[in-house]
Length: 398
Ligand SMILES: *[C@@H]1O[C@H](CO)[C@@H](O)[C@H](O)[C@H]1NC(C)=O
Ligand SMILES: *[C@@H]1O[C@H](CO)[C@@H](O)[C@H](O)[C@H]1NC(C)=O
Image 1 (spheres, rainbow, N blue to C red):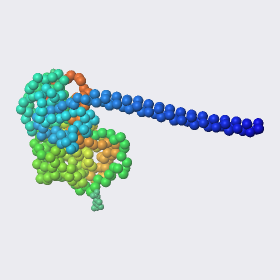
Image 2 (image 1 turned 90 degrees about the horizontal axis):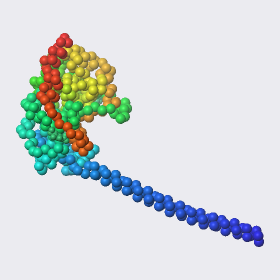
Image 3 (image 1 turned 180 degrees about the vertical axis):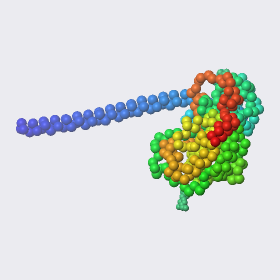
Image 4 (image 1 turned 90 degrees about the vertical axis):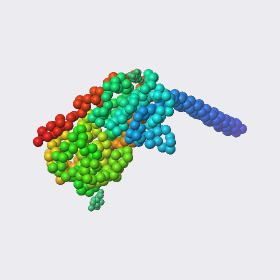
């Protein structure tokens, strides 16, 4: 009996323990669920708060007006990049901006008014209206000072707040391209080591045959020492054109598959002025021979180009022939491609520029006025090398 009782007791005990366990488990499950729901609610609320903060920061859409020359390639490329009628700034890090090619309200409603200076479209009148203190007048150009000779920059004293140009010291730099370090080095297989079957040495393509920088004199002399295939208005060959990018990708394909070198000669030798003639070529497997006023060492990796300004044309011809004869030496010119990427083309660079303008309108509250633009844009002697200087220098290397 006592034995039974003990047994019973044990069973009862066990039963109790078991029941308690189940109750505990239930309590545990309920509390886990409660804590879970609580956490979710807190998390959701904080998300909402973040969201509200985000929309508050950018709730106001900044408006940009293109005052003149909406035909300019950068504007066309950017505005046309909008997909299915959606806001063109959707492709930007900050999307709360709007761009008008024609004023849709009074001028004092715009956050920024972009005034385009170039040699193709004359600027007739500056916008005239009572300016609000927060409004920015933006000086826009992609042309070097010699192309802007027709303007009297004294008229624009104390007028512009920001500059948007190819110059690296612009408030909103809009360069023709850029070379940046890759996050991940390319492997040998990713690097197309085959340069194809290039059958020719040097190509040049130009539409302006008489330039401020006198590149034509350099080419004339160089031609006496080496064969050059000349495309465009200054030569007999032609290459597929593109409405926005000037030359068609097919044209660059042809240059890349045929030539080892391309003459990336700028028409003006001015500070920072380096155009698609350089970036569209260095983007491919051709070695650019540069002639311009930019600090190439700063914008491109060492061993990626040849600087014509360091050589007399006869010396340059010798050097190019030497590289032609030694493929190992020639291939060295593409080693940098493992570590760097090239961004070029009007559409891509214009997007970068206008996205930058948009975020700056949201983030920059500083007051700034250009008292004078003449030193950079009217007096090319400081900013640009005169052809005489260039040629005296180059031809003195004889
Ligand atoms: C180069 O030419 C060779 C033989 O003519 C051919 O087999 C090869 O596919 C060509 N390579 C390229 C990149 O065109
Ligand atoms: C823009 O320039 C004008 C004219 O000098 C000036 O009155 C205004 O304060 C400037 N605004 C900003 C936001 O820099």
